[in-house]
Length: 449
Image 1: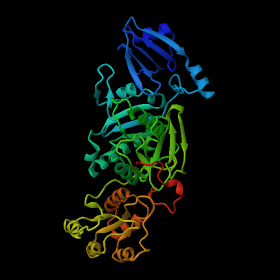
Image 2: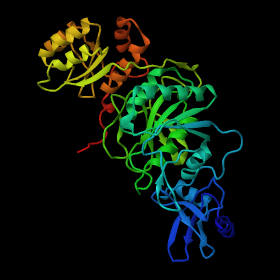
Image 3: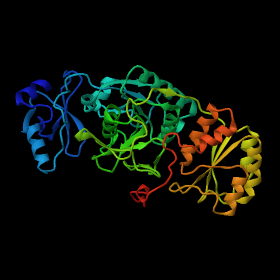
Image 4: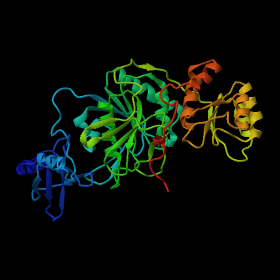
């Protein structure tokens, strides 16, 4: 039915069409491709707000072409506002990049069922192409559901499973890997993958959604489109988080996996690079990627090197006024091998904690200092407390995010038996987690107030 109506109207993918249903309701939008058979009487269009909907049709439905794809592109080139159709009217000839999407759960791992309006998990390649048909123009898509959990339930042993799964696909020759993940702990997982893949020939892209696909403001399709484009065509081979770059559906940002933090509970552009610019800017509708920073690794420049494994006995402790030293003592007594302190300012805690910290270091615990300020770096040589902490054996965390330092310490303790080697590694820039200097343009781009 849908095919016959479209053929009768002479409508092609990318055309602006009007659909008038038998009940009098009218829908207008860009005609989108459908990768599943046209057995169901549904036409998928992209509305002027950028979202896709499925319109159920019958033999009394009228389809009309308002503008051809070519007309829309000409008007857009002349500066007229428009929803830009896909760059390619049909998938390009010849082989496309191969991208695998590994599902771990989260809001993005669902789609709206056009027939019923319900939201359900969607992670077969067929379902993904049906929900976000744009990605089929970019790459040959395969998929795997590794697990389906809420991101607050992510654990280091799951990082290790993700690493193993991603490594398998890279060894099989995939041109990029997308890891779909809940947003709340995505930055931790991104850092874990960044440290585990010490040699990387293709991009690994983590992506999530702030709002589920049953909500009018859902960011799931846009983010997935941007992530697949990055995995398939980005010139760099790094671990990145790709999410909305601003509230509207204009561009996404690729944040280096060891430099990113979720900075807002609900905004679509919640993720921000800390102490760094984003690695790249992605315009999905234009099939374009702009690299903003010099990549540490270029695509196909390195062989795959995996150093998997994360120590479980590592703690991240936020200092607060009046914090009791028994918290440090408890961790030492329970056999913890590493502690990352999130101190104040340049890297300080109450002086009464120093004896317990010194004891921890003497018993072989690696203690790393980071700052609650996030922006800037620790400097423990400025004030007396900082110098006392250095004398007690605390390792400065430079400008690392506390979360990144936590993941790096867990990784380093699993890779090296020598504590001195671990301390050295914690002060060594491995994958962009430590910068030599900062510029003013790395500070917050919008105010959450």
